[in-house]
Image 1 (cartoon, rainbow, N blue to C red):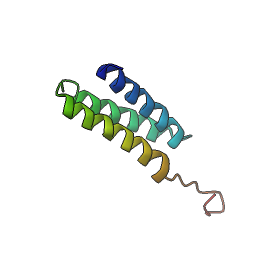
Image 2 (image 1 turned 120 degrees about the vertical axis):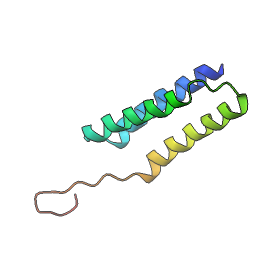
Image 3 (image 1 turned 180 degrees about the horizontal axis):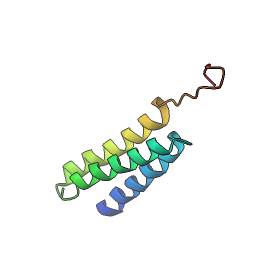
Image 4 (image 1 turned 90 degrees about the horizontal axis):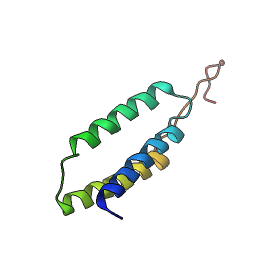
Length: 82
């Protein structure tokens, strides 16, 4: 797979992951989309294969971190955690 395709697939994967992680939290969903776009645009002109490989590894690490280390807490009416 071409490097650009892998980067775009990683970007789309992170966009889908944030929907799962921040389910029902519109504010976090919007903020995470803006941050993802900002980070990807910051690196859009990278052409070095080693740097791209490092960024792709970072995409996978961020996705795993989001899926396994982020916890959403909800407060019920009784002011207890649900």
